Image 1 (tube, rainbow, N blue to C red):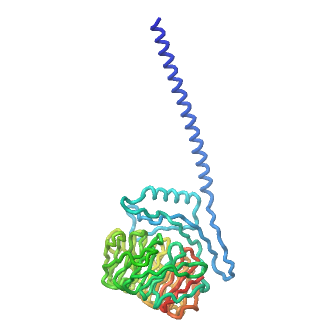
Image 2 (spheres, one colour):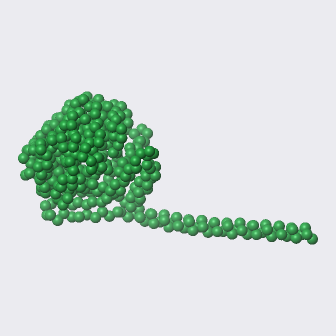
Image 3 (tube, rainbow, N blue to C red):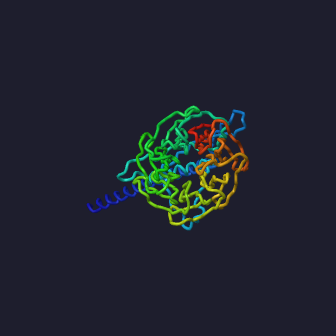
Length: 441
């Protein structure tokens, strides 16, 4: 009798266990179905969203002067993007990537956000190093506005001004000249307001550049060195010594921790700015008047009428493009597909880097390159090419049509050495050999 009771009890226990397992299975099945339903709903919403295009508001020009419409949008970008290795077998002649910002769909925006989150997660903060700002908001120019009149004219330097550069946010400007000073200016309400003076340069300043975050200024000098300042500090924090002749160009790479300098000693040097250490010296065979940097390429312009390409990941020159006249400046478009050169044969040339051919040659009656350091630039949307002339005039060509779009005269009574076009496309600044700085709108 006792045996039968124990057997029945065991059977009841087994039945209860089976019922509990069945209930757990049913609960899991219901949860799984609910999750699948949610995923299907999200998938449908994403498919619908992918068909929609992000709208970019445009502000039409109401001045009646026939200038182009301008629109702006803001993208959140890494403040210090790192260069990633390309795919195996990538050709050195095409190390450029397109970065068009005019036709983003919502699905692409989602992909960009996911990529940035992955970048932040992957990179994090360096061990033992100070934390740095990972992202910054910068205006992206959709359509540059042609300058038509001088908003502000300043006698900014004691002698000729050789260099000018906008910061990434378009509201901070740097000018440098033969008086060994760099002046920082705020662009406020169509006026230039003095912000700060950076001192300590050993000689005349030949070029200035902001790092991608806008927190540092790098300058090339005739004292055979480049110098680095932190915005907000008057004295130079680092001196990059090693060249044996005048340094004619100094540019940040795609990170605030690396830079490139070019010199009349026929070398280009790469620098680790964290250690103020020269990581590489390239013998470039001729006086270097300017340099620009792409993702994995350094491009140098020379007195021997050649433009040379150097792979930053390996030794040797990968390409040489001959041009007529000594090269005075280089400007790389933001999509890294086109290069603008200025030379002493009084022409500007647009080089299509996808096929390594000169696509356009710009010349105009009255335009004359005034010095071996005359600087020309693309507009931020690459629609226009801008340069200053020996007679104080500014010349602007349409890159698509090849026609002279405009010439501006008035404030400058001496040769214009350099020009800059702000990232938002609203303003242009020109500097001349008489120490004058002009803000155009």
